[in-house]
Amino acid sequence: MQYPVLWLCSWYPSAVDAYHGDFIERQAKALSTQMPVYVIHVQLVDDDNFEEGTQHAFTEGGNYTQHIVYVKRSFVKSVSRLTDHVRYIYAMKKAVSRFIKMYGLPQLVHVHVPIKAGTVGLWMQKKYKLPLIVSEHYGIYNDVAPDKFSARHMSFQLRTKNIVAAANELLVVSNNLGQGIQQYVGVKPFTTVLNVVNEQLFYHNTKVQKNEVFTWVHASTMDYPKNTEGIIRAFVKLHAHNPASQLVLAGIRTAQVQGLLHQLGNPSYIHYLGMISQAELALVFQQSHAFVLFSRFENMPCVVLEALSCGLPVVTTDVGGLPEVINPENGVLVSSENEQELQVAMAKIMHQYQQFSPEQISAQTLASCSFNAIGKQLTHIYAPYLQKT
Image (cartoon, rainbow, N blue to C red; front, side, top):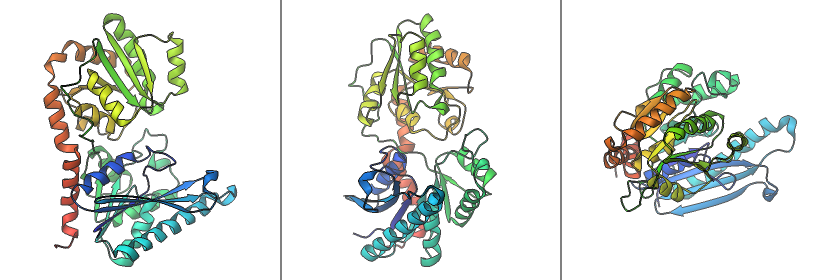
């Protein structure tokens, strides 16, 4: 097997966190429908199960191989940041060297999230004269994120700027993210490549019966950026005028959400599913009528694209990349923090529900973010840098 493309991923699912960077994994799988791809990810761990230091995990499947390297963190707190960085870079370079020994040089290197893998991407670009493509997924290029770029350490900012500046191509998941990078990092042309939807799970399924009452669904991490509490408060007021309705919540059981539900008397029309699998979430979407997300800030949330792919109209906030995918034919945009506006928008969707076409919403979304669509787009981006065979 020859791998013309090598991916170096700062974020990626692992045994430590199966969801961290899962959207990058889906892009890799999308590319593998068109050409071979090899992924390297180094995961720092403090679990006692990794006493021997570095361990490896390989997954091979057709055109797609992922190499996860587990490196135990330093136990010396005073020097842990520097030591861990050195261990990370060493492990990543060692994995790259192993790849080259087994398969030869790739034709290009694709880094996902500049910090930290971009440091090794730069090294490969300079040492082997390889094209470097950088994808940024981090929604920190704004004034509202708690870990916003402008508040990060100077070394973080400088390294990010150097990696982005050196890239032959910069890819982002939304125009909004690309514009933010231009504002905070430096002027750089970019190409938008949407997050991937697994169309084998998320699609308009006419064989699945909708719930008897109008069902709103919300799925997220339910932490501060998502403002799930605002959804609950707005829905309680909505339900008072529309009793034949319910709200289904899927995601992490945060103390804030649990506390609010308890304060409200744990209403029977709000159902908390907790963490569920992608397949289970797809079925919940297909049984529901509409999706709601009330984020304070966003990038290009996969869950919105997945809901649209199931044919659900979406009510969400006018933040990040969301205005790029939400329009009057598939949903309503509202202002962040405005619960009254959210309530009105949800009522509007319910009263005008028959005006939406699930078939059209699903088809238009999957045309731009399915495995096949994203795989072909990435192949097209790579084409100028790959040797003709």
